[in-house]
Structure formats: structure tokens, C-alpha cells
Image (cartoon, rainbow, N blue to C red):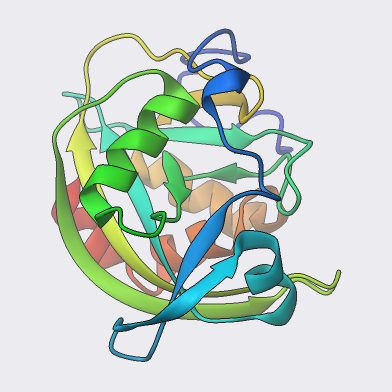
Length: 200
């Protein structure tokens, strides 16, 4: 199995819609909120600089399921500045200065996948990783969960493909093909699986 074909029924082979590119702010213009170990704000930094220097910043990750309990995955657009072409959870991102986490998570869900749904927080965790290409993640992440039964309209600037998959198939494929998935998604589905299950 390759990163082109995740486990479970394929909901959409490719991206086709979603928010227009004009509605998005480019990576070079985005700013993130720097935080301490307790998620208290310590400053603001350009998004790319934070990832180049490994500055700890606030982030979120969203997990959406359908009424059958299948998890919605996305394959990140190949043009992403890191982890492009890899499968991951429904969406993730960073709140902008002055923006709440839940507000930001809903915004990003619509920008990437063209829908919104009620989201509830599951918990907060920290992770850091060096991608080996001059970029790092050092994030204080709040996880959110939601349910959606309607259409999904991925933005092709952000998402190459989507899939709905059940947990046993997903876990088996992550074990068999870890390089097909983003670092943080593998982390969530292994070391933090009870937290994710609480929302799915």
C-alpha cells in the first residue's frame, strides 16, 4: 500500500472544491502565537520562522467522523512546505493572533475541506520533531472532534485527496506503511489513541 491509497472506502479520489485560494493567507504572511510549556502566550512570530527555528507555538488538530464512526482523512497537497503528499487527520493548523482555538479550527476546516461542524475539545498535548530539512514542529496542540454526514469539498490548494476509514484498517496501515502518514498523525494514533477515541 502506498500513500496514494489509504485503507477504507474512498470518499473522494481527488480534491475538487472548497474555499478559493483568494480566501487563504499565504504561509509567508501567516503569524503564529508563541507559547510557554503551559500554553501561555509569550509572543508572535511569522509562521515560517517559527518552523525554521523550532519555536514553540499554539496549534490545533481536528478529527471528524461520520455517523458510522469512520474517520475522515486528508492527503496533504504535494506543494505543502512540509509533509506534502502524506495522509493525516481531518485538518490541522494554527490560530492567528487574537483568534480563539475553536474559531480557528472551524475556519481551517472550511478552508481546507469546505464544510463546518460542531467541534469539541478533547485535550492538549505537546510534541516536537525535526524534519531534517531545516524545518521543525514544536507545537502545543489542542485536539478537537466533530461529526459530519454531508458533502466534503476539498480545496485543491490544500488537499490532494480525502478518504473515510475505520480505525482497525487505519491502525494496521499506519503500522505497515508509517511513511505514508504525517509524523503528528502517527503520534496521535499511537501514543495518544485513548484521547482520539474519546472523540470518535
